[in-house]
Length: 141
Image (cartoon, rainbow, N blue to C red; front, side, top):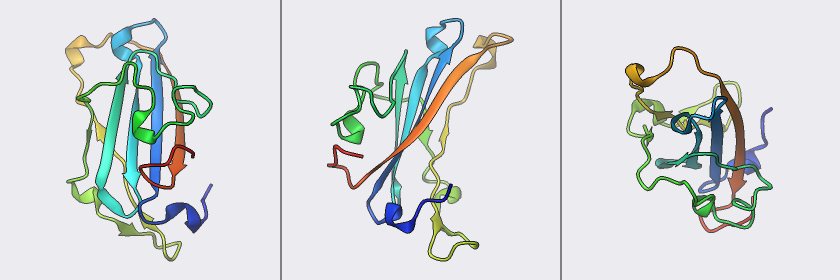
């Protein structure tokens, strides 16, 4: 699905999130990641990370009526292990050739894994979503 240009005005916040839960209940393999971008400002990319079961769905009481950065405070890590890679060349805003006036703006996170600590086989249940906010002060999406 391609959204209309009105969703991509300067300074609009796009907050993408993913929750993951280990089917066997391993807390170290259960959590969430949120990635925020400001349209046309790649340097404003920010990553949030949670440990444990986290509800970031649009009807969650941890989300409704809150600014994007104040959502789901329980379990939110003050220093996420994931890092936004905005300093890399891939974050340069790039024109989209097939749609005039559109640009590509990445939200990419990376977490190196210690292979010695992972079990041979794991099953992870995942959920993803995205929300659009007018700016950093908006409580509605």
